[in-house]
Length: 407
Image 1 (cartoon, rainbow, N blue to C red):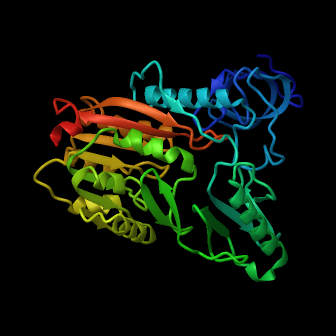
Image 2 (cartoon, helix red, strand yellow):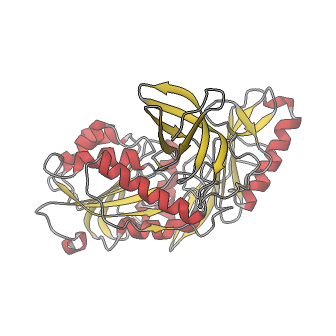
Image 3 (spheres, rainbow, N blue to C red):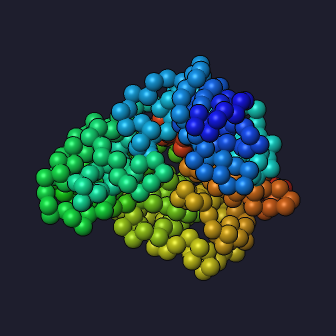
């Protein structure tokens, strides 16, 4: 790696991709994190800022492209802060995500990872996203996503990862914002597609914040733009199957339950289920989804998980505990509370390998909670981005080997 004059930048070779999707390189005594790179690229880069021995860099010129580099089809690539893996072949995206998971488990959780981590590819590499949050610059009349590394809005007319019905919604909402001076105070717009219609919050451009529904496997889920629901519907059935496995028994806990994605199938397998969710609108949908499914064995708590754990008391450890926290992972008090419950099995569903690894470290081994990592699998819920969904299954050491043995 050769350092050139400052005006010309630095010539570097990208060694691999790291958590966060950046490329790793070394030059001039610095560890460089290069945005929008591909492993094997030879690049001329500009260092944008330095923090200690780490430099954050951007590409000036691609001197020799990686064999896995492709031409990004999106005209907003590089400016929009959304899709940061469009420069990679899809196979390279999948391989990079597996290596990111492996890196986090080894470096953060200090775990020896399996030789192979299975990743389920997305059915659709494009036009998969059924939920979106669009940012609004009401002064400039822009609608889109934040630009990379800033809070400025990148005005987007077309988004290649949206399902067609949501793309049509984007066009209509954007047209309303461009023409209507009455949206001056609007900051963002949420939209989600059901099996038949679209929900938009706040109501805009003829769209209402209606309740929509989606059939996943044998379950029907009702929700709206006011409550979180996963973006890639095609992978939800295998995701649920991987999380639950053959589990059944007496008691199960569903923490960060949302609208009940995992609650409903858990309620069919366990005698008693408790679902915990802080969002009042989401928990309303959990209740209505349970009622629609005619499931009456579930207690629903409208509380933050940390607060709920302070008050939960049980003489017996729960057979099964599932948690699906936001990207930031779990607070320390949550991990402490989970360990105090001593669940026989834990399933952690995560959309961020780094926070997953951080939390697993508190659960696994003699230095943690005494749990063993039985398996870890991944799902490419977010093609064209560095994000990946992961399911980690853990069991208590010296405990019963399978939850279904408890039935």
